[in-house]
Length: 170
Image (cartoon, rainbow, N blue to C red; front, side, top):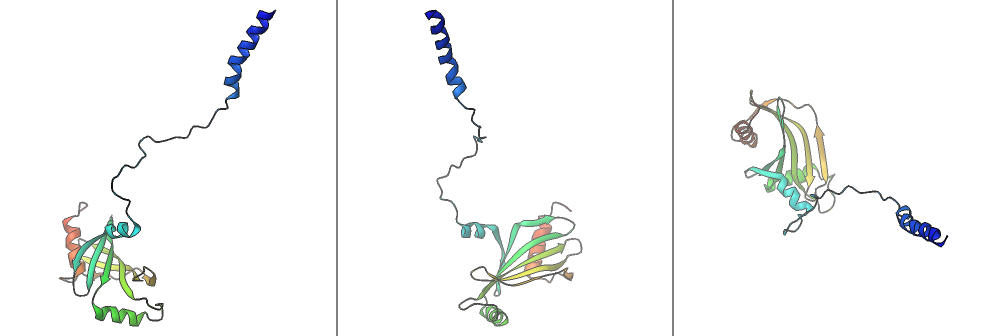
């Protein structure tokens, strides 16, 4: 009888730990999801600066475009940024937007969403946003835009040449 009770007790000792352990939810862990870098992480300002490619520079300002904004559709859509550096232009912008500027703020740059018709060599502006140096929008306009011939030796002409040279869809 003691042998029988001993066998039952021992069998329970084998079964109880397995029954006591609750099944745990397994979290899917991607073994390749890790970051290994000796470089410090980039700040938001550094990432924003990397987003823009300098197209050209003039007395008025620096003309940059966002390469990732170029869309391969019938017309090419490009987000363009002008960082103003001409004091006369900046004075005029500050005068025009004086009511919207807070104390100490100044107009600094403008983003334009341009659409180019590469075959006809036309362009139109469909959206414009004017920003302060701190990145606050002080004016925003959008609409269908009017097709215009690309003026020679302008930022639009330089951008059109870039788009034609790098057009893989025509």
